[in-house]
Image 1 (tube, rainbow, N blue to C red):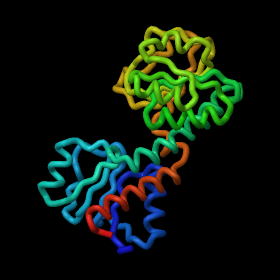
Image 2: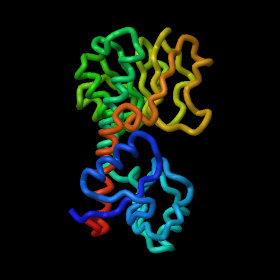
Image 3: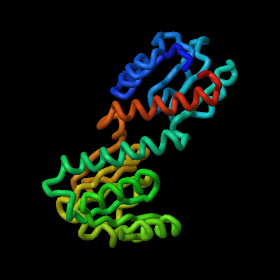
Length: 247
């Protein structure tokens, strides 16, 4: 593999481990590298260094991408790529199970669990919970998703009927970036884990649900498995660089 110079912005555990992995592969870390890797989510505007030939980040705005291209730099948004999304979802699902175990007084085995949403994270989370012996119900809006829920052996609910679906559940995971639970009455002591990134103020409000225990599960890959998260990011970065014919 061709050796390149990288600039790693950000100092969270994922970025630090990514830097170590790139050095291990023989690349050079510098403040003015050919490849710039930004934290996720990334700043509103790209760095001004003209030496950056490829700028890679996450949740990039149209203005960000336009500015990169105007100065001749290639740009990659890892959060719109399936290779990164799949790897990240697997790490997130495992981290969510771990966090649930740490925040409940019961075993996952035998627990009545509801997973709201059946996208990448929801689907993988249901499989892991069921493998541990939980009685899993998944709620989805689309009929096609509900068909897959049944086909994969889980109990099924429509998100339009969440007030009924949450009854009797000791753990509820939300993977949908929308506030859906206002009309729900949760079981006393129910653990509600938020895995979706929501606009400020749009999360489930514990004050309006007496006895509900909230757990913030957002950003789990970098929080619970930063080395694996860094490996997933590195693999995606290399895929982008191959597409740009830089390696």
